[in-house]
Image 1 (cartoon, rainbow, N blue to C red):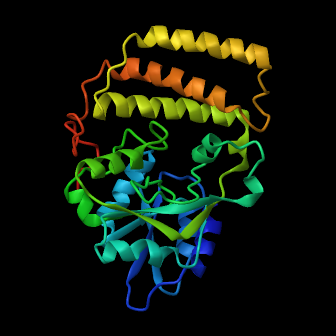
Image 2: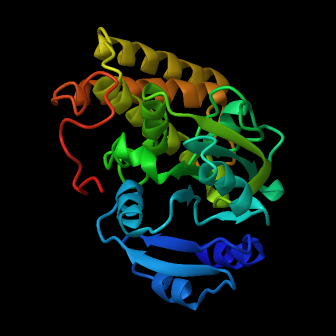
Length: 303
């Protein structure tokens, strides 16, 4: 996937007076990642390989940010195809200081689109057809942050994101930015096309995603929002009973079949969120209420 993404970036245009680098954060790979990065090229972009052996996307991003030289930091994933104007359209509002962050469009590859998709399925595949004009949500496959933001808030929380909770590393940064009164601009005149692994469409993977979403929500609720959740075990048991009864009544699909009902995803997310909340509640809170920085420092020091 990375090789295809790097190849797609060859078509991305760079304004003549801009100096641009691309940092590929290699999160402890044992395959050809380093070789693929070192063989990639772009006439106007310096491509650099950054190795972070400890697992977790947040750790990888923090390590890359620590050595990045630019002021406008754009983020994307290794399974996207950017539009030719993506870099300029995303970076310009940051460089002109019109806002402190940008939220871009993410379009799912057409060959992966299914007639049974609901808005929930599209959201879980990170599709953002149009960034909201008011309070646009930042999603990691197409977003940008001015470096100065991290003078006010922490780097990405290393307990969140792929390789840790599963999701939410950009969500917490977005919420902290809102708390700090920083501006996020929607950028709707460009996009990236998302090409996730087709296995993401299997029921087993929708259910695994529900578990990760639930655990991520529990972390944010307990540590940052300081939410209360009375009787979480009782609630989880009751929702589990309802889930199993509905599965029996509607004959649950096979794990290796494509698709998953939105109700099943929602039930399981809620159950796992309650279970996760019970586990998190045994820990000291990592943040004061709606804090911009952790009380307990991350493993990677703030740069």
